Length: 194
Image 1 (cartoon, one colour):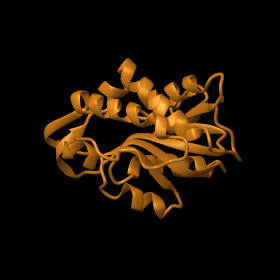
Image 2 (cartoon, one colour; image 1 turned 60 degrees about the vertical axis):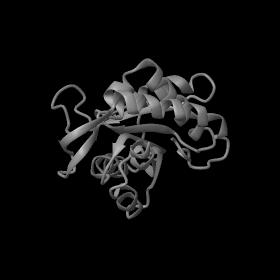
Image 3 (cartoon, one colour; image 1 turned 90 degrees about the vertical axis):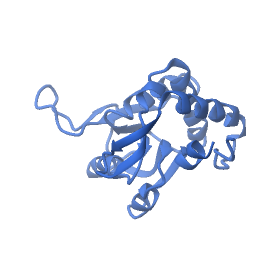
Image 4 (cartoon, one colour; image 1 turned 120 degrees about the horizontal axis):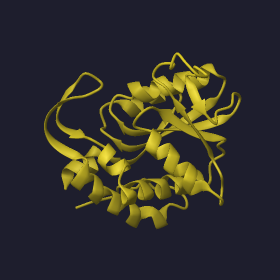
């Protein structure tokens, strides 16, 4: 059974039913069993294929509501993340923020496109601002650290990353070494214990 999946945050009590429902959707649509190679290079007997959840109308709506509740008390100029996993989350949270507390969004590309504006960071990103980054799943944190470094190179401050699911395999520690707090909505401990 789902236990204590929401870390105590001021004003987040009302989101607990939404986190429980998100938990169910992730278990049904995104938690795969088998043998999988992860982006970190490790091999796992389960995989979190989050796109069926982040591209599900109810799933992404729940994610946006929960994250927006977390952001209400934050001083943040924009939200962003590394393509591709963070893109639906950024879009949904931006949409959810309007008109109550509008928050701009941006995407960090893995590589410049080589055409058009040829930007590494695209969307509504400005230097000398405070940003919060998103990820759909964190393992060791390598992917989201690419986004952290990219925005810091452009003189933006980032001290928090919100992830839908943390695999509890070192991301929090690796981000902490960079002065970044990892805030998971769920962890694999939550998903695999039930």
